[in-house]
Length: 608
Image (cartoon, helix red, strand yellow):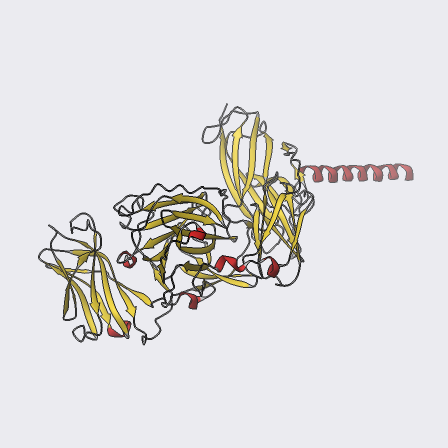
C-alpha cells in the first residue's frame, strides 16, 4: 500500500514537472517591473524560426582623435561590419550608430584613452581599437589665425545680441542644449535664419594662401536627416548691400532659380552629402580650377565639424575640417558683404561658433522689427505702428516690404509725416499683381517728422498690398541694448532606443495589403533604425507579438547591450485562422526609465 502511494506521488510529480516544462517551452516569461536594468529571457514560440545573421566582427580601423577645443575630443574611424559601435573613455560608455562621436567636458590636461568596438545585432563586441590624447595638447589654435577677433561662440542667449546678430523668422526657433561641460544653441524649428552683423571685408589677394581675400567659418553638427527622413540643409550666403536687409531667403522654394538669388550673392549649400555653390547673375564666372580632394562623409547629430567658405580672387571654395569639398570659379563683384546662415528642415542642428576673416571692421548693432499683418486701403496699405522707443538711439531705419500692385506704379513709404519714395531691391523689381516685389526706403534719424508712435503706410496711384514687411534698425553708439531673442532651455539630450521598422511577407512572395494564402510561412523582419540620433540608448532586446500574444523575446546583450540591428523570423502559418492578424515589434531599453518603442503591421489570410 505504501509502495503504491509512493508510486502515485512520484507519478504526480512527474506530471507536474512535465507541465512545468511545457509551460516554460510554450509560454513567454512574464515581464517584471523594476528599477533594475531590464533583462530579458530568450523565448521563441514553437512556430517561430529565428535566422540569426552571422557577422565577423573586426576592430574598427583608422581611429583618429581631433580636438576642436581644449575640453573635447572628436573620434572618427572607418566603418566596419556590425550595427553600431561602443565607445569607452574614462568611466563612460556610449553606443553610437555612425563612425564618429564627440566627447565633451573632458579634463583639459588629462590623458584620455578612447576605445571603440564594433557591435552586432545581438550585442557581441569586436576587439577594441584604442588611442590616447591630451585635449589641450591636441588642440591647434591655428584655425583662428585668419579670423577677426573675437569669434562668436553660441553658448547662451547673450551670444545672439543685436550687437552681433539679427535673428530672422519665428521668435521661437532657438534653444540652448546642455552637453557635458558645455552649452550650444540648437535650431528648434524646421526653418530659420541668422545674419551676422560683422561685415566681411575682402583684402588684397594673399599669395601665400592661394589668392584668398576673406573667409567665413561656421562650426556646427550635421546636417543629417530630420525625423521625417528629409535631408537637412544649412547654407552660408554672402549678401552685399542692399541685399543684406532682405527679410527672408527663399532657399528651399526654388532658391536655385536666378530670380531668387540676389544678383551679386554667393550661396554655399551644406547637405548630408557635402557642399555645393550657387551664385547670382551679376557674379562673373572665371576659368579657375580648384582641386577638390575632400571626402564627403555624412555628418552626425552632436558631432561638430568646422566649415569654411573661402573667397579667392577668382573662385569660392567650401572647406570642411581643412579639406576642400567643393569649389566654383567666380569673382565676386564687391568688397564687403554680410553672412546669412539659413537652416532648412534642420530642427535639432546645433551651432557652436562663427567668425569672419579679412579686413577688420567693428560690427554695427542692427535689429529687425517685424510688421504686419497689413491693412488694405484705397491706393494704400498700412503696415503697422512703430513706437520711437523701439528705435531710440538709432542712426537710421530701413523699411523693407514685399509688395503687390499694378502697372509698375510708384510706391511711397510714409512714416509719420515723413515720405520717402521706395526703391526696388532687385534690378528686375517692377511692381506687378502676381509676384511680390521687394521694395525698400531709408529714413535717417533723428527726424521729428516721424513722431513717437507713428503708422507705417505704403501709398501709390493704384491699389497695393504687402505680404511681408519689417524695419531694419541701425543703432548709433549711444543706443540702448535691444531685446535679446528668445532662447528656450532645452536641457540635456534624452537618449532613445532605435525605432523599430517591421516588414511582413509570405513565402509565396506576397506582401500586405494582398491577402496571404493559407498555410506556408510568414517572414517577419525587424530592423532598428536610429534615424537622425547618432547616440542611442542601450537596447536590452526585442519582442514580437502576434495578435497581442508574445511569440518572440530576443535578448541582445551577448557581451553588453546592442545599439540596433536586423532580426529575421519565420512564422509557421498553418494554424492561423483566415482573416486579419496583427504583428507588433517592440524594442526594450536596458534602462527602465527609458520608454520602449514599437511598431505594428497587419496582414490577412484568405479563406479557403
